[in-house]
Every structure is written in C-alpha cells, then in structure tokens.
Length: 79
Image 1 (tube, helix red, strand yellow):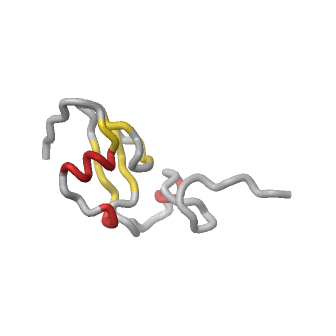
Image 2 (tube, helix red, strand yellow):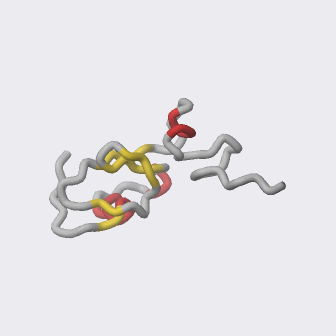
Image 3 (spheres, helix red, strand yellow):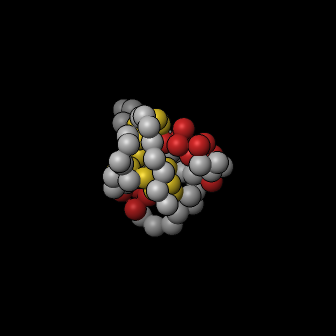
C-alpha cells in the first residue's frame, strides 16, 4: 500500500489516518528501524506497523520490550 504524505507526522497520526486501531499496534518500523509510535514519519519513508504479541527474541533486541517484561529500553538497576 502506498500513502502520500504532504507533511511530516508521527507514526500514531499516520495510523489514525489509516484508521488502524491503536490497540492493534505495538511498535512501528520506519525505514527498517523499530521504535515507538511517537517517531516522525516523513514523505517517502517506508513504514510497517507491528501488532502486539509478535513472538520471538527480536522484540527484545529491537527495543520493543525489555527482558524484565516492560515496554521500551530497560532502566538502569538501582544499587
């Protein structure tokens, strides 16, 4: 699918434009780099939305979840 963007927007704004339900999206790839939905999408970018619960260790490697089970990068441990 090709969608023309006239201006920059966040991945979340693009998902809303495409009428994708927010609860069906866990992360986004923009030009091959995974990240949160507040990342900026520019005209010409390649975008892929990732559904929640995508299996495999890649979710940790890509920073979609941390090894302790939370979302995003793991916070430093307190001593």
